[in-house]
Length: 285
Image 1 (cartoon, rainbow, N blue to C red):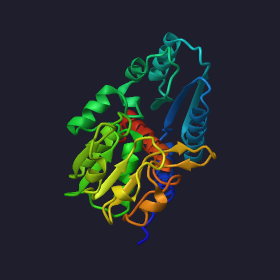
Image 2: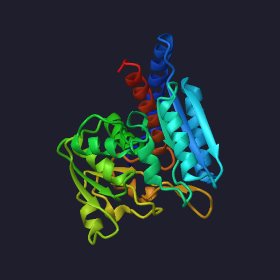
Image 3: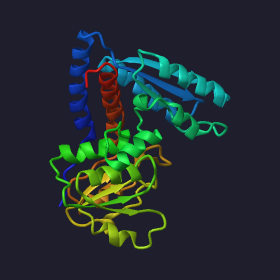
Image 4: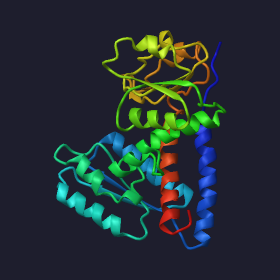
């Protein structure tokens, strides 16, 4: 059997169409959602991400500020910029591109972002609200994973979901969002001794471990939904996920490709978070 492909590109475009319409409605009311992105240093991947975010703002009618700072920028100077952006009325969302240079404490910077402008969903208050099930700005990639599953017409209620990878950015928050949808969740990680056996029990398998093509068909229950969050650059320059797509698609049910799966959803959910933050800021949520 050959699996159905879940196209993150298509879903992302659908959501962006809705966002653009809502932005037009807000503009009539004198509100333009504003996103500030801060990039410290010249990491090539980060520069690409920041350009893509800048383009998304332009395409959707957002106000955009990009602050490109040299790698030697001090932590105090970065915190001062964050504080300035916290005070700016035309900025609804703030994103400091990670990773930061080694001399800067990432936690201190994340904690400095105003909770209501934390459109990455990384502030401890937003994380805490996610854990207890209260309303919060959700981390973008995990939120995109759930959106893809739901828009593919897949019900998570009562399903066994297995998450491979326990990072604070993807693994942990996506496990919490899966529980919100009434899935039963098992977490696997680098110290799990019987990972393939556990993975084969999954109705829904979410993989976020950062190892190219690591998950092959032996990990897959026939017909299982497979969501590949991995984004790895191979020696030949091509992108590959954490899932060996060619072998797995012959066993799985619906599956996300890399590229074109979860990737396009991350910036789209960032835009959605910024739109929500703008609505709340202006009492229109």
